[in-house]
Length: 216
Image (tube, rainbow, N blue to C red; front, side, top):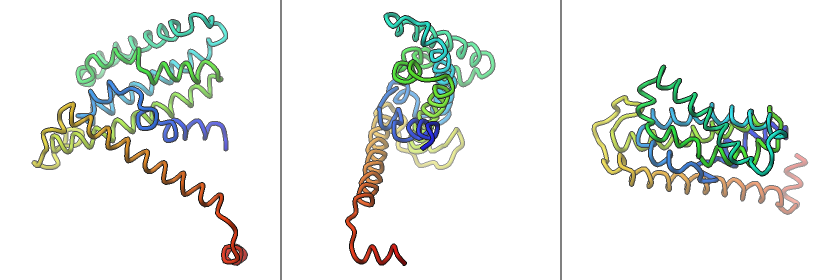
């Protein structure tokens, strides 16, 4: 498999930061009551994660090993500050909806984790691909749960009224936690099922019937 395809699939599916690695739970639980806020946070993380991965990869041979984590945090904090300024200036509604969670991106486990585990050991292009894929995996997970919570809790999707029937609990942090847990369980179950089927096909014993079928 092409290395960039593998990086992409890992970020989106096999090492999905939300459903498989369970990272970034603070913004996840705080923002998925609204699909718009969830998607906005996810896309912001895509940009910051990609740029930080590229910067850290480019500087990886210049950063002393003893201070690599503080250096990573300085780079990420600079990018987060720039992102906050841009959002406050051009997308004030999104800036207000993200609130304090935007500043917490600086210490987001996803971004620091990818900086330490991937960007500090790979080329700039590979790190950029990892940043985009992991960020989109995070965005997709947040947006999916945001849609579910907003629909069940408010009867709307991205602010558009769909139904008057609502379950108020899903508009609360407790409801978000429940949706998060269910989504993780379903995702892991599907992945385990796919992997089990793949192994069964790979190691399926040869029989006369299967040989005849393959020959046909």
